[in-house]
Length: 159
Image (cartoon, rainbow, N blue to C red; front, side, top):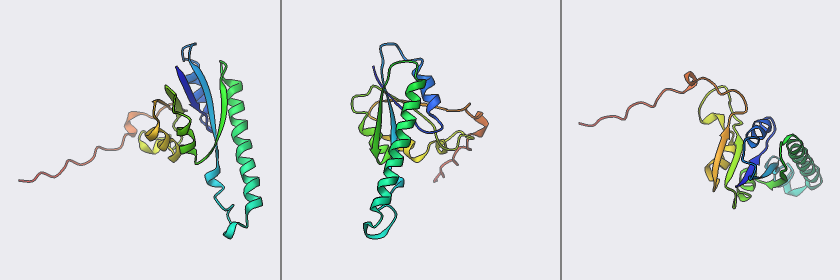
């Protein structure tokens, strides 16, 4: 079984906890993403005048992602490959799932309530587009079911 584990700041420990229970035969690749979307195509200035700054921001994003995947690999209880992907986070991660059997990732949004807001935008994109099975874990103790939103109103009836 080929498993990809998406490690992100603040949630990677929960993902590594799930890697611990995989069968010994499973191969694991840890993926971190350098969020180049936050850098922007022009480095935040008009007419490309921010090229030098964008290079520095890109280097910083790559360095942070590399540090994250290295820290996760050090904590991983088994041998695991490590990969840093670049570009739009959701797209970059999904591109790496072509031959994966399982993706493990953690919720990263509002963790105080059950529901769709418990997924950040990158995680939502990855979950919606993953071409493999997905194991979505809570990085903290899940909230009680009393945090469920009320059910939608009943549809109107027409005579």
